[in-house]
Image 1 (cartoon, rainbow, N blue to C red):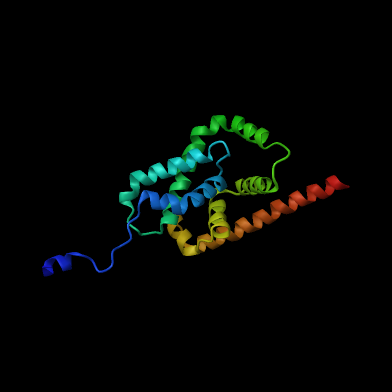
Image 2 (tube, rainbow, N blue to C red):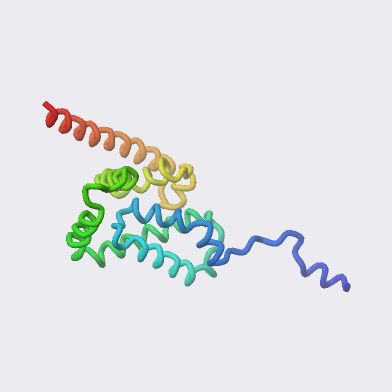
Length: 182
């Protein structure tokens, strides 16, 4: 084998990202976060599909400056925002359909998921994003700062504010429940 051919082969090949590998590894992550960002049952699968269409079109542009998860979260966030704007006029009808489908006999996990989504949607978007990434996905402050293009201090401030606001919301709900029991 000529020496020039040996030099042309890298000693350690950089792992190449494929659409299939990203989909297999991160489909559940994208689905969960699309839901947490506000997708209803009626269109969460459409949002996930749209995310992976964007990934397919942009995969060659991924430079590895962030992890695939942070890159996918940023795409998911943008797709969900766009779809929310596009579907705003149908939101009332879709919410009604989702509630009728779930009915009063929904499984506890479905109810808990719906309750969590409703709580998260009460937070202002900047706080909600940080809360989801820290508390539900386990991202570090540095990853979040990079993904959202904010400082680590801002991440900490938004997380603290989100936690306090959620505590207040939950306390108000508990107070309402106590007053109904009297």
